[in-house]
Length: 269
Image 1: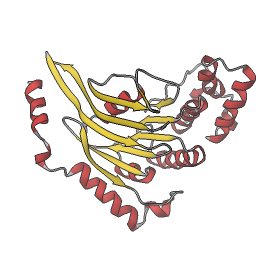
Image 2: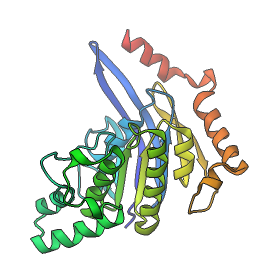
Image 3: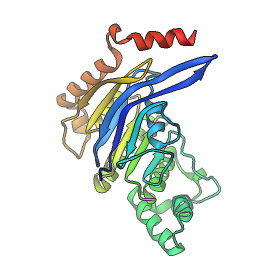
Image 4: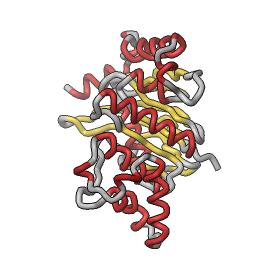
């Protein structure tokens, strides 16, 4: 059975000012097992809507959302979700936060401790395992959130701009940390970002969306080897792909504002 992600003509409408607003329009894309893809696009293109549908947090109004070969009917343990806000329990230590999902899953105390320690070590927080979130930096909090998501053994990670609130240096460090963790665990990752450089640096493929309503615009392969590095980030090969993604995001032709988008405009009035 495939352990990937499949959007099959997925649409989503929201109520808006007495009418409806089409946020996502017949979006179709497949993410293979073990693949790392990033989603980018203009503001309002439905990136987060698509991720929330994959997470089972909202339902599509059209099409089918398939994860691990099954239709999505709500959140599930096979999907770990990480948002920009860390959502750590401030009264629990790093270890207790990482163990939280394991406790819900009914793991014994010894199992919880062993599993939590493995992922705390994996994200480099061993020295802070018994610290409360208030003493952690933003990057450390996000590493704790990643460890918590990994601990419940999801086959898929869904990440919605998880580094968006971090300073530039910490963001780069977190990108390298995430890729290091991914290279060892090889889980399927869908990562939403508005940062073109981040999208290219992390991904096997960059999925570019068109806005209003959100649709698939272009899929751009990133033919750069792992592990990624600062030298690669500064290379001409990286710049070439980055420029292609930039043009796809910020220079979409006016004709792509098609009839469906015009219908959206009429519905919103």
